[in-house]
Image (cartoon, rainbow, N blue to C red):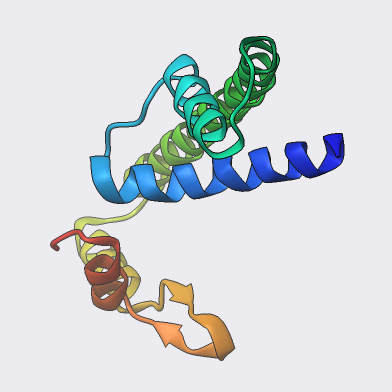
Amino acid sequence: MKKWILSFGLMALISFGVMAQGQRGNTRPNPEEMAKMMTERMTKQLNLTKEQQEKVYAIHLDLAQKREEERQARKAEADARKEEAQKHEERLNEVLTEEQRQKWVEIKSERPVRMRPHGEIMDRDDFRKRRGGGN
């Protein structure tokens, strides 16, 4: 029974995350708000007692805090990679002539960016459109 409740809670967490993205755009609730929302939902669906609510909230809060820490760590890693790539590009530009730099920019813009599922190659324009960005 405990495994069932925990499994249900995890599914609720995942579905809440998906729903929150669709409803709120880029704003995300903090871990406490997320745990509260998930606990309220489980309380309504399962008719939890006050004691159960407190325990379920603590479980949800622990998971939400861990997920937030993981998200922050991924963001920090992505920022570090971006900064490293920028430094790399600056170092290359110090070596290349102006003509070579222009040609390098042109070559990079023509390269495929990502592989789609099933092996399709997505060019930079398609990638930017899918990502929601402009040029």
